[in-house]
Structure formats: structure tokens, C-alpha cells
Image (spheres, rainbow, N blue to C red):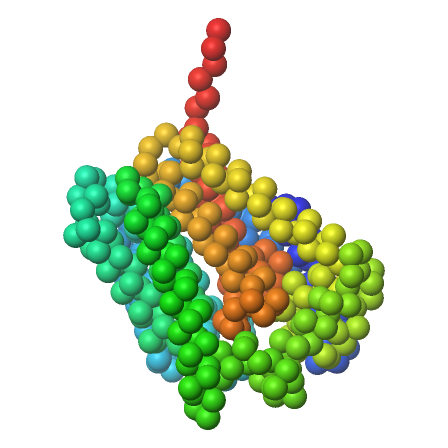
Length: 364
């Protein structure tokens, strides 16, 4: 975690220094200083959360769940704030803002395991599975309909489905359903992209850009094309740290969703693989914690955190490489974003709390 956060700060400064100098009155450290502040707050929050016994959340998880729903509805009130054409934030004092969709992720991570533990063997029949899916689906629907944030809705539903998959005794049917779902999604996207070329829907246009980015190189596909140029020009070892050309205005908002493309350009394939391996190592350690947790709630809690990070990393890298349509997902611990970073660190505090409860038996 420390390696990822420190690496993220280095890459954030390298990626954002030019645009910050141009847009923030010559302050090349603007984004770096804000992210560093959120890192400090995040580490303090992680330490505080790790000191709380995770069992405390079992009875409070439903309250957290409905609180997250309430916070998302605040987006539609005068407290809501629009950024880059999307109204997904809430105004806070001192010029800060909060994205309530991030609260929905951690609320689902806390509540779905508690619900499953309460249900016990009732989770085995399809009636029980549908009941859990309904709770996760309701949260995902609110995220999508109220904040118009499809990517977060996908993540919330993904966390729910993976948690059920892990705890359910029958796995083959879930693998089959997932495989069929992926095939149908890809086929449906291609059919819609072919049939709806004249549609004004921005989501359908994203599918068109994904299928034929070169046809939109000067419009909606500009960011995707420039990101691919950055990845391709990096080669195996990259241009060198700080030597990116595409960050000089060619990749819009490179410090956010597209930071992985600048990593590829400056550090090459070698650097990209190292970053992916860091995430793999983190996920493996969380899997070890989940496997050795002293109870089911702790195991499922860490499973939810692991699912969240894994889904977000896969979606971000897939978007940057144009493997899937653009969904606006940031790279955890590396991309610029205060709300996301603080809540991710809080999730890591939960994982550490579960880890502290593990007792290893020694053989004498």
C-alpha cells in the first residue's frame, strides 16, 4: 500500500505538473499538494478504522447502507455540484466536495456480508441469492439513476455478485452465467454500435468510439486515441520519468482516468507490469487475510474490499487500452481524487482490522 501511494504521488506530479502550471496560476505542485494532503488524511483515517473491531459494523451496516442512499439523493438538492458536465458531487465547507457514490461502495462492502451472515443457510437456494442481489441492485440503481454514474453502479453490483459467488457452495453455475453475460454484453454493444450510429445518446456514442476510435479522433475519441499513442510510444522501458510528451495537453485530464497511459509512456511496458504486480501482490495479501479470518463476516468483508479494488483496476486499465468503452473509472491509489483515496484508505483500515484478529497456531 505504501509503495502504491508513494508511486502514485510521484506519477501524479510527473503527469500533472505541466497542466497545473498552465491552469493554476503557475503552481506546478497544485494537484500534488492536494493529493498529498488527502494521503495524510487517508492514512490517519486508515489507522483509526483499523483500531475499531470490525464486528462493530455488523449491527450498524444497514444504517450505513441507507445513509449512503440518503447522501446520493443530496446530489439532486442545492447542495449538489456539477463538475465537467456531471452532477455527482456534494458541496462541502472550505471549497471541498464529496462524491457520495464512494460512500455507496463502502456501504455495500459492510452491509452485504452482514446480510449473508444473518441469512445463514438461506443463501443457498436461489430465493436467498435473489434477495441479496436485490439489496445490491437497489444501491446500484440509485447510484445510476440519481448520480448518473454507470461505472460506480457496475462496481457496486460487481462487489455484490463476487461476495455471493465466494460464499455460495455452487460455483459452476455462476461461472457459466458470468461467461454468457460477458459474451452477450460484448455482442450487444457491437450490435447497438452498428444500429445506433446516428443516436445522440452519449453512452451509445461511447460504444461507437470504442468500436471505431479513429473515426472520432478529433472529437469524442480524441482522449482514447492520444492515450493509445502514449502507450505505444513508451516501448519496453519508456521515455523516462518526466519525459512524457502526451501529458503536455494532448491527453486531457491525464492525472485522472488516463494516468496509466502516461505511466506506460514514461516507464514503458516494464513500469506498467510493475504497477500491475503491485496490485496483484496487494490482492494476494488480502486473499490470505480473507482465508485466515476468524469468522465469516471478516472473510467476506475483506472479499468485498478485494473485489472493489480488483474491479476498479481492471476497468481502468481496460478503458485506457480501449479494451472496453470509456467508463470514467480512476486507478486506485494512483489517480488524482481526494474522496476516492480517503475511502479506499478507510477500506484498507477495515482489512487491517480483520488481519489483526488472525491468530496463527504454532506446532510445538
